[in-house]
Image 1 (cartoon, protein in one colour):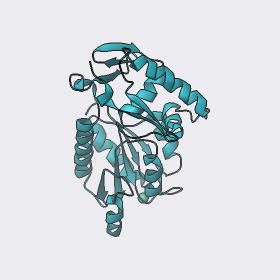
Image 2: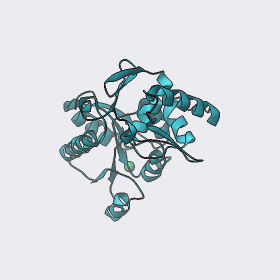
Image 3: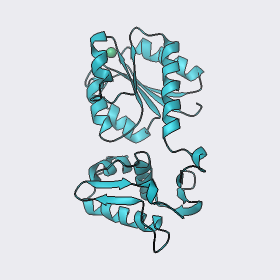
Length: 232
Ligand code: CA
């Protein structure tokens, strides 16, 4: 679990500090935010591995943050709430939380939940160690992809685009979603710019004349990744 970064969003500073201590003891890197405002910006910028999100927060409540977050990222979220009547809502499909904890909670239990959610995530998300299983693997250190063992150099934009698609195989990502995921500075570019990056990426991922690109364009909706299109 080392080098995993956890974002703690909690307006009770004492609780936030204790959470930080407990998580750090387990080797996590922890950042605390004490209000709901600016959470989305921070997440876009730093891409934490997991977010511990309090429901009742000044400026923007946890559930509304989560809803917005879910349109653009698949980072695991554990919601914290003091209101037991909210649990059903938090667990509902609508919210998209990966787990929840009830306040007052045991800090040890929160740490255990964090580890469990990360383990689950690791089991489903493509990882470097899955190289033998996945036909397409990213290497952030060299800004490249390995497709069926062949190394493909990527630009930073192409890398982030492929990473965004690879984290959500089969899911359609709109140009706006791709834009938010690719440009951490919140920059707005035209649809044509996104299309042009996709075109170059598709060309790089098409290895032979008879090969289909694993990136599919879905008319008027966006793009999705189909790993089954990759074959020898
Ligand atoms: Ca609170």
